[in-house]
Image (cartoon, rainbow, N blue to C red; front, side):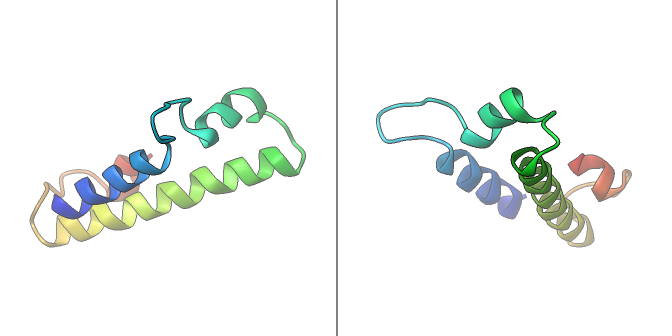
Length: 79
């Protein structure tokens, strides 16, 4: 659980500007350009896929370490 918390905290921190919170660039860009079929839309989809894979790996590790329930597939939980 600690690993997941640390990872999520790091992700959240990287989306905040000092003293200002304009939101996460990737989320904002996805809202505006996520349906774009060009290179920007492709890059955004790859970003979310990579993020999902990283979260699934952390969840799987936590399940194997008996830190969280393994009742559900880690990839499903990450999605």
